[in-house]
Image (cartoon, rainbow, N blue to C red; front, side):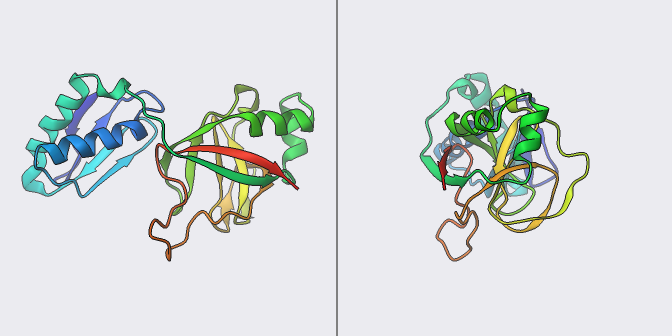
Length: 206
């Protein structure tokens, strides 16, 4: 791990282990608040975490970040709230995924729905959450030919992640099913249904 400036109004902790940035987010927020420092935002990614702040607070915030990492807080994982997402396993790529993984369609569904996932970080589109916890038997590279249109609510996998497309968009992930859940709604107090650190289960439905 290392702490360094990220421009004039941000700092970054990088070289983190996969799955720790989301947990570290709350620790950083609490530490900065305790030090009387204002974080404008704390944004986790796969192996890094960016803190945006006023330029004048940069050095002080980096001292706090260094203190957090030095005392091993990154290794402390908390249990976030659990969100169940009902899924119809009717995806266009379900049979292709089964063939590529040398599994039956039922086994693909079982592996995907039996796992518990964690929101590692968000990106690509508002409300798009990268979920870690995908069973290794389902790890596949992205499609060789991305689709120009993936429907909102498509439940998909790629590499080591699963995700739900919050709105219609291009995409190269393998679609296993669909859900009626609204992943992004600006009229809600918290527009994104899924936030870093939350746990997710996919519940099979018809």
